[in-house]
Length: 335
Length: 219
Ligand SMILES: [Zn+2]
Image (cartoon, rainbow over all chains, first blue to last red; front, side, top):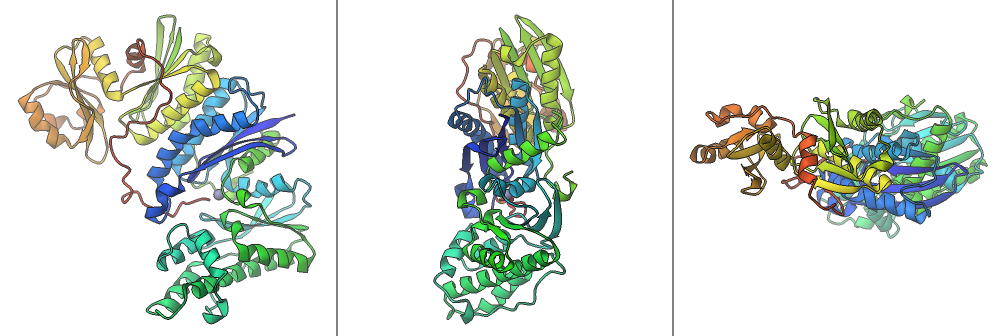
C-alpha cells in the first residue's frame, strides 16, 4: 500500500512520521525545543533553527526504524514536508532534508501547507468522519474556522484579525507572571478558580466570523492592574471562559450557516479543557458529530503532514526540487 | 571512490563531484538561493556524471563559519543524503577550504581566511600554506580589530570577508578567492575519517534578544 514519510519543522517541533494511504500511522516521532525557549517567553527563531538542524536526522531515523523501514530502501511511495507557513530558518531545514531524501530515494515529494496538515489531523483519528466538516483551528500562530466539503476542499470562513488564541494565552500568562507557554498553566489554574468572580467585558468580538483576542488581553490587564486582592485562579478562569465563549459563539454561527455533519477541534489550543467541553456540548446540541483530538494530535506533528501529503500527491502531484520555503503561505492559496 | 561536496557557507551555492579521481565542479548560484538551487543542482550534477545517489561513498559538507541559513540548507541536505544512501559524512570548515584553495592556486607564506559574518563582523583564521596548517582558532571579530594584527604580522587575505572589508585592511594583498571551492573541500577531506554527525560552526551564541519574536509561532 502507498505510504508517505512526513517531515515537520515549521516552529519548535522537529517531527517525522510514516503514514499509510488508509491513514494508519505506522510511526510518529516529535522532538520539541520548547525548553530552550521558555526563558524568552516565546519561540526564538535562531534557537529553533539550531535545534532542527541538530535533531532532524535522528528524528527521521527513528520514525523510519519505528515503522520497520530500512533507511536505504524504505519502500515508501512519497515524502511530504511542511513548506510553510512558519519560521523560515526552521522550515528550510526540513525542506532541505526532505529534498535530499527524495533525490536519493528517487521518490516524489510534496511541500505541504502546515495549516492544511492541521486540517487533516482529525482524519488520522477518525478516518470514517462524516463530511462536510467544520474545523476550529486554534494554535499559538493561527486561529480560524474552516469549512470543508471533503478532504482538501477548504473554505476559510473566519480568522483572527489580531492575535492567535494561543498567543493570547501566552500574553496573559506573561502579564500574570505564569511563564511560558501560557495555555497549559492557565488551563490548570482555571480549574481551581471561578469565572464569576471577575466578569470580563464580552464586547470585543471581531466582525462576522472573524476572531479577535487582543481586546480580551487588554481587558484582563485593565481588570487586574493594581489588584492584589484577586486570586490568580479566578483571573485564569475568567479569561479562559471568555475566550472559549467567543470561539464557541463564532463556531455556532458558522455551523448555523453551513451544513456540516461533523465538527473538529485542531491545533495546540485544542488541548484546552474549556474549549473541548464547549465544542462537545455545542455538537451534541446541534446534532453533529464532534471530533476532539487526542492531546498528542493537538501539538505539531508529522503524521498530519504525511496525511495531507498523501492527499496532495494523489491529487495534483509532486513539488519540484526548486521549491522555496513559504513562511507566510496562506491556506487560501492552497489549491 | 565517489564523493560529493556541498558548499553553502556564503551567498554562493556550489557543488563538486569526484568520481575515481576526476572532479567536476559547478557554482549553482551567487544570490543566497540555497534552498532553491542546491538539491536540483546535485541531481543535475549526478545525472550529468552518470552517478546514481546510491553510489555515493562520501558527502563532504562545509559546516562554516558563514551564512547561517546557507549552512542549515547545506548540512540538512548532506545529512539527508548520508541517511538515505549510507554515505559517510565529512565536515570541513569554510576557512580551511579557503586556505586549501589558496595553496592549490600557488599562494605561499601566511594567509588569513575571512568569511563575511554579517553585522559588521568577519569570521577569521590564520594559516601557514606550506603545507596548509591552522595557526590559530577560527574566531569572529570586527575588521577594525583585525587590522592592527595584520599590520604587525602581514598575511595574504582571501574570502568574501576580505573582499567586503578590503578598505579596513589597506595594504594587504587580497586574493581573488571569495567562494570556498567545493573541489578544495574534496581535496581537504580526502584523508579524513567520516564523522558521526555534522552541526554548523556558528562561533556566536544565538542572539536571542535581537532575534526575539513570538509573532510567527505556529504550533
Ligand atoms: Zn501548528
